Every structure is written in C-alpha cells, then in structure tokens.
Length: 194
Image 1 (tube, rainbow, N blue to C red):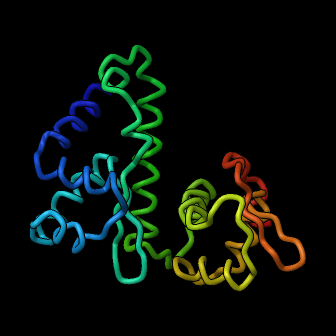
Image 2: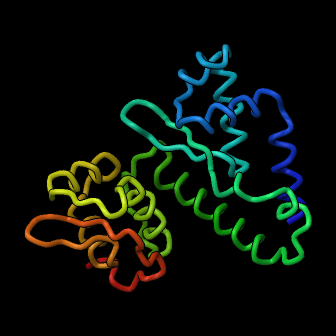
C-alpha cells in the first residue's frame, strides 16, 4: 500500500497535473478543451492525462468522437491521513487491486470506449456491464428505444446487455418502460443472462 500511496502522491506533485485536476473539478472535459482552457498543447494534456488515469485519479469515457475525462471524486474525498496513516492497509490494498483489475479488463475489452466482443468470463463481463450501466441515470425511466440507443453506443448486442441489466435487477421493465434501479446490487450476478 505504501508503494501505491507514494505513486499517487508523485503523480499529483506536478504543477500541470494540479491545474488539470482543478479544471476537472469544475467539469468533465476532453483533451482539446482542457488544452485550450489551460493554454497547453493537446499532446501535453494527453501525456499528463495518461499519468492521471494510470494513477486512478481520473476516469475516461468515450462520447461520440471525444475521450472525456472526469475526476475520481471518491479518491479526492479521502483525506491525506487516510492515505498515509491507514492502520488497516489490507482493505485499501484489496480495493486498489480490484480497481487495477477493472481498469485492465476495460483496457482489454473496451480500449477505445467501445466493446467489440463481450468477455466470456462472468467476472469480466460484469465489469463491462457496469461500465455500460454507468451511462444510465439512477431512478430515471427510459423507453426501450432509448435504452437500446445508449447501449449500442458502446456494444452492438443491446438486447443481451439490456436483458442482463434486468436479470441482475439493475433495471425493471414494465409496459415497454425501463426504470433504472437507484441502488443496484452489483454483487448479484447469478442472473446476468436474464
């Protein structure tokens, strides 16, 4: 855990990265917009964004033609004391390992934000499903056409993914209207194929 904390602190110990993080604290941005706002080249922003994503400080998602970056607020809500003085490092280390595994799966199966092939292994498939599910607003209702459109932006087989969401209880369907569960049980994966 000490190594991960040291890496995190080294990553933010850069004036440009602090400016980028500050800008992302205001709103999610894509590379070109960040470059324009901060007076940097797009290549410089891309270089620093790669470091910030690798350190787990920033998330990235594809929206149409752009890679949009957002601040990992859960990381920034932790205090310096929690990072440095944590007496029980095992839970934090396990959470970090899980996050690194999630990122590896997404890099493999959604390298550019689109999932061409769904993973066969259940644990990996749930990670991809959760990434797709994050595009839906908790508690909101959608028509089937809207659900299909959102899923098809990142995976071609929207029917299977939609059924998976229902099977896992992440969404409910009634009369062609889909409601996103505001508190889905992400550990419930036995009914992933609906």
